[in-house]
Image 1: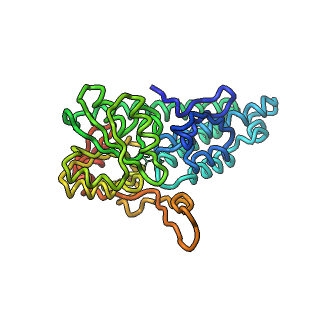
Image 2: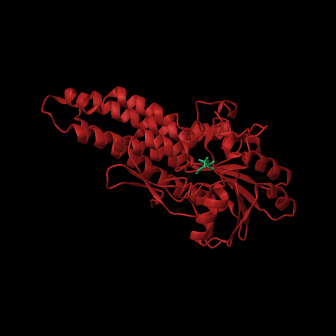
Length: 355
Ligand code: MRU
């Protein structure tokens, strides 16, 4: 099932639902060209680790198609046509690098863009015409999207067994259809539990400062008919202390080889609170979120965002706005993936799942 957060535009580019306007307005943007896609990703018009990877891949394919269409077929030979179209390995590498640099923490972005670059360069090296290269790029972007939808469905199936009947589930940020190519990651588990008739209740953290929980998860929960309450981030500990939370489940933007998981700022605090109150803390993520090149979460780059996002007034005070934090593996009860639920010790579990 594909979401309406993203679509191929009939006009030739990519159509994005502008998530900065939700839930007040449902407005679509026509994204044409690499610069505009980079801006949309940076400004969180499109967001969520898997979805920014999909969006970047589609943006790259659409830009290649436009180059190929503008050049047409000159009859001068394939290499000359590619040069004329500007659909060269140099362009591909520069566009891929620009997209990958749009946001640093979610590895899904660089993973998807790198996959696209490899496919495009292979097609160019084998002497394919610009239109054929562009067609391969579109097929690859579609495959990245379709695979993510399938991974989300698998995460939902794997995670549902972790949810006791009647559970109150606390979640953070937004991990649903607005963040992925399918039903979501943590949200996918919540949706699967709801659809199985487990009678769950959801507590959605507002998720300061951009309120992905209060605006986006609340919108998705309401649309799915799932009983839910929004809380301010600072209320989570009090609810746990009163026994009002049965489990916590969040998404992730990058998971290191030892199981340390980066996710939206505030996730680490939830994990510490969950441990203090003896509540299970789960992370849900597709395989594309694992970065096995990093031994631990210490090496995960943390996006620093503008102070203006959190300051009411710039006068006399500086802002400090890290957008993500890292939850150490020892605080994570289980990692729900499309390859099953991984349990500690994570280095071994992740290596086995990768094999
Ligand atoms: O800054 P955002 O809104 O892109 O952050 C998103 C998150 O932190 C999500 O929890 C994460 O990407 C997992 S999405 C399935």
